[in-house]
Image (cartoon, rainbow, N blue to C red; front, side, top):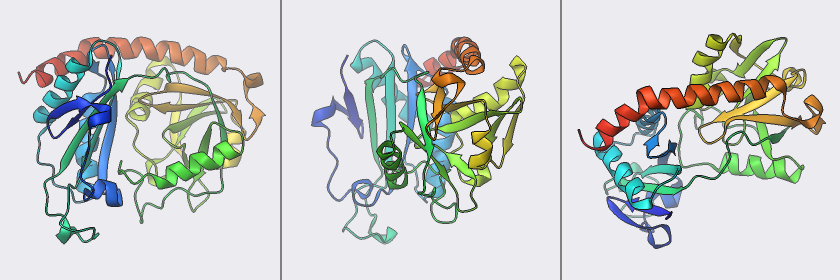
Length: 300
């Protein structure tokens, strides 16, 4: 299994991949990205990830010069070169190399730079987390909307560092109105008074692909779920909490602000849902995503 990079169509070992020093992604975080996981050779949820990449590009005024089929074929070629096994796929699109280290979009004279990273998938799915609500606020939607999956991640980097300084494994950030938003790279769900509650999109969060799946899937297995304004006090009333993301699936939270949930163990509701979600996940991959991907990735 090899860690590979595809930079503008050229596949190389990860350690040999380079972008120019004038690339605006490197200079200013002027880029967007998506992370997709594969099961075997097929990415899960590719249509949703592609749709979000396009939306992020529009949000930062980046004109994509490749269409979905061209990108899918590059991903498929890089996956094939990396060998068998489940993979982490990161697609980064920067505004390209500019004419000068100047933030003005008039200096963005080059074509977009497309980087596709393919690595062995680390076993993160279902791993428990210890959360703490930190003082650092999530970026305001009016400044840099967290719904845009951009390469500017310093808010999250510093939030995670603050949480780890306090002995947690991940952070929960609030917005300026005091409502909980999300963790450093995950959405959050809390079981409060028999209902699974997750922060609203307009509280300033990323519209997670797994989050959207869960909002649609949970009612089909008899669970009540709502999008709501949640305060830290609301979460502290929860009997169970989990994080959701492409790489984590449903990651149980065993501690919140140092207080153990379910005795510091994985809660029974989360454990049951995780098992059921993985079965749903496998069936959806087999019947929907894999056939779509085979047609798209092969150019058919």
